[in-house]
Structures are given as C-alpha cells and as structure tokens.
Length: 482
Ligand SMILES: *[C@@H]1O[C@H](CO)[C@@H](O)[C@H](O)[C@H]1NC(C)=O
Ligand SMILES: *[C@@H]1O[C@H](CO)[C@@H](O)[C@H](O)[C@H]1NC(C)=O
Ligand SMILES: *[C@@H]1O[C@H](CO)[C@@H](O)[C@H](O)[C@H]1NC(C)=O
Ligand SMILES: *[C@@H]1O[C@H](CO)[C@@H](O)[C@H](O)[C@H]1NC(C)=O
Ligand SMILES: *[C@@H]1O[C@H](CO)[C@@H](O)[C@H](O)[C@H]1NC(C)=O
Ligand SMILES: *[C@@H]1O[C@H](CO)[C@@H](O)[C@H](O)[C@H]1NC(C)=O
Image 1: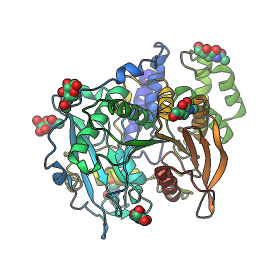
Image 2 (image 1 turned 90 degrees about the horizontal axis):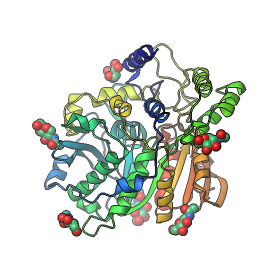
Image 3 (image 1 turned 180 degrees about the vertical axis):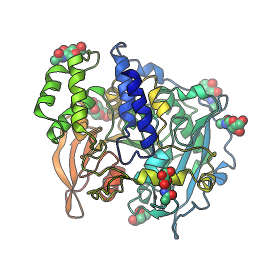
C-alpha cells in the first residue's frame, strides 16, 4: 500500500509537476499530509515560538556595485515600451554554507521613489515567488503560449508599489545552497534567512531603507509572513540594527491554523456541493481536528471519501478548467489560462532567460517537492503570532479568493473567530467597476476582505479586483462600497 502510494506520487509528479496553475498537483496538501502523519505521534507545541525567534547576529556582506550588476537590461521577449526598472540576482545569507536567495524587483513605472516597498512570498512550502507570484499572479508580465514572449499585465501590483519577489527558502526556484543539508529546513530558518536577506538587500538598495515596507503572501506564506514580521519588529529594537519600516502585512488564502484548515475545508466542500451530506456528517461526528487530538480511523476513512468524492475538481479554483492535453476544456470564468504554469516552466528554463535574470543555470521548477516533504517544523498554528502583530499597531489584512477549495474562505473566517477580535465595521460589499468585488469586515486591528470569483491565486483569476483590494491595503483604507 505504501509503495503503491509512493509510486503514484512519483508518477503523478512526472506528469504534472509543470502545472501548478492548472491540475491536481498540490504541494500544500503533500506537505500537510506528512506533517499530520507525524503529529499523531508527536504532540506539537507551538508555545516556544517566542524563544526561537530571538536572533541578533545577522550576517551582513559587502554589497558595493551589486545593485548595478543586478539591473535587468531586458527580459527576452518582453514587449516594447517597458517603463519601469527591473533587477534580479542573489543575496548571500550564509557565506559559510554558501546559501543565497534569489530575488526579482519590479519597480513602479510612476512614483517609484515614493511608492512603498512590498515583499511578496509564495508558499508551498517550496514554491517559487518569482515563477508563481511574479510570472503567474501579480508581476508586470505574463508568459505567452509560445513560452518565449511576454505580455504586460495591466493590473500588475508594481503599478502602486515597488514589488520585491523573494524565492524562499534556499532550494526554491533559483535560490540555492552549496550545502545540500540546508534543503531540510523549517519555518524558523526560513524567517531568519528572509530577515538576513532583507538587511543585506537594503544595503544593496539603500534608497529603500526608510521606505514604508509591507509583506504580502499567500497559502503557506500564512506561516512565513507573520513569522518574518514578528522577527522584524523584534530585531528593530536592537540598537545597531537596520530598522525596517514595517507598516503592514496581507495574508491571502493563508494556511495559519491546522484545525480551521480542516474544518473550513470540509465545510466548504459541503456547502459548495462537492461532498455528500453523509460524508460531511461522518467528518463532523468522527473528526476532532484540534491540536493534540487523535485522528481516528473512522475520521481518516471519511476524509478519504471526501477526497474521492471531490474527484479531479481543481483544488485551487473549484470552478476552473484543468490544463489537460486530452480535452479542450471550457474556458475559465476568469479567463485565466490553466496551462500558464507550462509556459512559465518553458520560459524560465530557457538559457538566455536565466542569463538575463543573472540566475545560475539550473533546471527551474515552480515547486521543490523535496523541501515540502522534508519540512522539519511546522507549528500547528500561527494565530498567536498574528495576535501579537495585531496588537503591535501594524496593519493586518486577511484576504481570500472565494472559489479556492485549498485554503477556502471558510477557513479564514474560522481562523478570524479564533483571533477573538471584535467587529468595528460590519460586513458590507465592496465595489469594483460597478460590481461587487467581494465583501469586507473591519475588525479591531484586523481587516478581512474577500475577492469574489477568485481562487487561491487571487491576482491570476481576478486581476482588476486584486489590484483594487491591494491599493486599499496600501492606503490603509477599507475597500470602497461604491
Ligand atoms: C557556491 O559555490 C560556488 C562554486 O564554488 C561559488 O561560486 C558560489 O559563490 C557559492 N555560493 C555562495 C552563496 O557562496
Ligand atoms: C504619483 O504621485 C502623485 C503625488 O502623490 C499623485 O498625485 C499621482 O496620482 C501618483 N501617480 C500614480 C500613477 O500613482
Ligand atoms: C551590534 O551590537 C552588538 C552588541 O551590542 C555587537 O556585538 C555587534 O557587533 C554590533 N553589530 C554591529 C554590526 O555593529
Ligand atoms: C478534541 O480534542 C481536544 C484535544 O484533545 C479536546 O480538548 C476536546 O475536548 C476534543 N473535542 C471534542 C468535541 O471531543
Ligand atoms: C512550453 O514549455 C512546456 C514545459 O516545458 C512544454 O511542455 C511545451 O511543449 C512548451 N511549448 C512550446 C510551444 O514550446
Ligand atoms: C488592538 O491593539 C491594541 C493596541 O494597539 C491592543 O491593546 C488590543 O488588545 C488589540 N486588540 C486585538 C483584538 O488585537
């Protein structure tokens, strides 16, 4: 049985590894399965986070001349009239191990010198912020079906911010380490490396040192973003350390709590007509997903039935077509091409593209499955970290594409219930181009926004609504109700 399922995983990876954006490949699910199977024997403690975070010895390497070297002259196939600056390259975060993180910066076409700096992180764990975040979701370009030319994304987030995409941790995308044991990593190391990256990057780009700074991310970045934010606030107190001017965080369809991830997902399946009443009832009466509870055989059986019932509905956007060579799928309601992941894979593995990005010649993949499978420490919940951030005075937004089945909107709502904050501005529809863009609730120290008709990769499916919500986030205003 075990061998059979391993074989299945390997075979299916061969076929679908290229297609994060369009079929059954599910890096978060794979990582959660492994973590949850360990949790039945290991009662996970999430209370020692605080201690592990203390970190004051940051490596700072020489950065002179590196900014100029990182300037991208032109990406192969980019359209004419590109009116913003792009940079990419490596920042060494551990010179002894030879560990370096790859970034891509897309500056704003207008007001770049005053617009905020936003760090964007994809999740996985193990998935690329450049290939996913920049090339498929919110970056300035989309790769065309020829794998070779780019077109402009008119709703790119660099219209309103200078966006820094970081491939994190080492082993993801173009980021690497010369010490292969570094690829067995965890939340804490990822936060430390991202922090070290930022401190060094700000030496390379000193004009951003005092700029308003935000961190946004989705999915498993629901762990990365709060943990990094907390580390920044903590280290900002160390006198001789660069102060990072952190103003806020945004978490999209974010995995922040394992209990609500489970309860929210099965409730979403049921209310979206994916599983039967009987399976849902079986889960409700047999499963206790809270921390430390034992998952019974009966619960596992009903969960298996739920996955079987779901069939090959695309987890990350339940009403979207699959990327399939065998069928001419109906077009997606969002008009997002489900095979986009293939074009990105083709483009980023073209040698001249890698050269223009100053990347090492490697086989680039959207997600590194080794990283996800070997993740050491995945806290059961990061809600206490989010609560600390809420009380710290930075702005905390949780947003959710409402057609995601992977980390669905129910999960986000159950997580917010657990945060025990109070409603200040009750639920209302926000408007974009005369239609409901989604819904908003303003809580004490927290804003919740849904993006209507968007799956997990919100800016891919609803680019206009996503940019409107993101602009509100940066302005610190609730999205408009007109
Ligand atoms: C990794 O090793 C290569 C080959 O020795 C070296 O050129 C590179 O600088 C090393 N990377 C880091 C981050 O030290
Ligand atoms: C640039 O900044 C000016 C001054 O704040 C503002 O009026 C203008 O709308 C901004 N332009 C864009 C495209 O953001
Ligand atoms: C910062 O201060 C600590 C102790 O106060 C010292 O050990 C460290 O070397 C200092 N770092 C820098 C970069 O000056
Ligand atoms: C679920 O498990 C937790 C942890 O063991 C326990 O405290 C709680 O009472 C259980 N809930 C139910 C409904 O049994
Ligand atoms: C684009 O790249 C994908 C992934 O490598 C490949 O399967 C496909 O055949 C390529 N398409 C073209 C038009 O080259
Ligand atoms: C909101 O923040 C204030 C301090 O800024 C804090 O006193 C209060 O407890 C916070 N409330 C919540 C629900 O986070």
